[in-house]
Length: 405
Image (tube, rainbow, N blue to C red):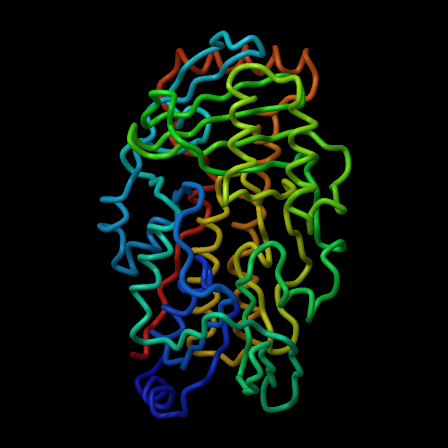
């Protein structure tokens, strides 16, 4: 870009962008769009940035994104440093114990695992003084015209923006408004799961213990000995239980039925689930779309390309996608910018979604024979040094974009 072109961009009226969702992709995108001269508004249905949540990973290319944002030192201070992953058989006996990176493909001393709330708080604080946040609200309707996108909010407001971006997760309302029902983009991977917190009465610290029988897994994830543990119940389900999704009681009834005869610590976990106020239930799925934009509306993060927790790359894809989308719009109109975003990012997304086929789902075998095969592979991993990372994690070298502010 020439100096004259850069000056023209700086003196032009600020382009406006509305982002739906203040999780991870939304604030990251807001940060970069603001750097490139946009006036950004973020709308979020929750009352504030959400605290808590299951620990998440930041790996490979995504580490460079948070470094460029200036929040890497804070995230390194918040690193959990999970040290041990122990697998148990159905009778509670130990199969093997190994370093988590041997399974996840992470790189010890480089990749990060942090509480989700620590990341969302860092992202929010990095951008809150420069971006407008509308909490306790959400998009009701979108109507694109020649001059922009007319938005009505559920809180009653009406405004027009040059573009709108859905960063509102796998069950994106923005995607449904613009692209249609989720069924056409939803790739179900054959499992459902529930996660929640419960008291740490197990003397666990900086470790995960996972119990398995065919088609069922239960895990306790302990950050520190004085913290609550994250309980995880995962099970094979031939078809998504659509009837249970809108009904929390039905979700818990389904989980309790599947694990009714389970041993180990599962009975106590089921009892804790009934008392927990933070139960999250969902299908293990991916979102795969032929296009991530339509007109003046685009999608980023899980709304566009959720990879599923089996890959461990949802957070990293959200951070990298936000960086690439904003940079692609730095010196282009929305049409050219959205096209450049897809060209520059799709191969990275495809590689990381493909990690499911490299063993993600095989952690949860559905037959006794497959479970024995998995256990034998895990025993062999315990004799090997921690992984050196997976190529998909670093499959994209971030281009440099020119800030206008």
